[in-house]
Image (cartoon, rainbow, N blue to C red):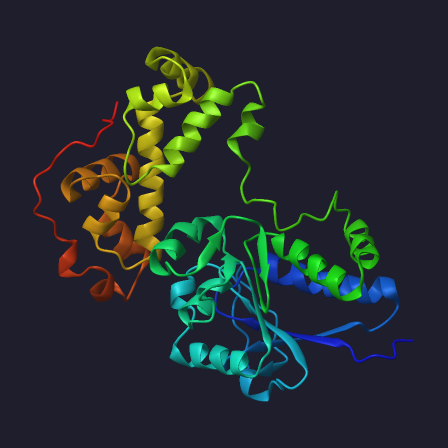
Length: 346
């Protein structure tokens, strides 16, 4: 029989939250109770108004109460459950509530893109945190004082954040291990048929080296250099020299294993980063172009349209209904002379 009070968690759902990250987090707590035979954990589902909000999968899980009914006394943590279009999923009342929770000395966590709300409330300054990899670039641009990580999850003092998918299961198992012991966490992991509990050192996405194996270290090194130099691009000759091969050898490696020439691969990396910034930040079109290695907005717009089939300004309008006046300011109009970037398209 459990003689100690259960540890209480509250999960704040916001519109279009990720169902898989939410349910995985709750499942970890339920699994700990089931295996231990004790009520080690209790959890509550809350929304700002107390009425259900729809998850990104199109249905909802009814909340147990509104934020006004939530008792913060004795609450271990409030977990913000984020998902798609996170910049439209909150208002100033949401941020005020999060600050109130922090002032009550309650731990704060998040799943998927929920860390964006914590950052917007000013509650992640100086903390290490993470977010779904699609939103990493935007977070780094918008909140430069936050220590952004590309790892699956981050636990830093009284803040804990995870990326997307079932990374919340790994994060909650880590917390269960700290609170109840690693044996219980391992048992819950086995119940969920997990090969292992991934820790905070595991990164998001499958690295290129896992696709290529260990047989192409020069190619992997070249791609890593490209990814690290999207704003100040590296010429193909310099790239080849840095990795210790000839330009022709490097071209053959890209063509054989990635089915494209190096300049095209580099361009696509920069354009995909640009799309993240367009959809996740209020940066002007010209600022996005400069952040991704294009020296003029016209050239950037042409490359973007050729690759995605839509101009960047139209892309932003399409995915940000009702915010066009905010996102499409006069700063988006560039009249700089068009100059080709260092590596041209092929």
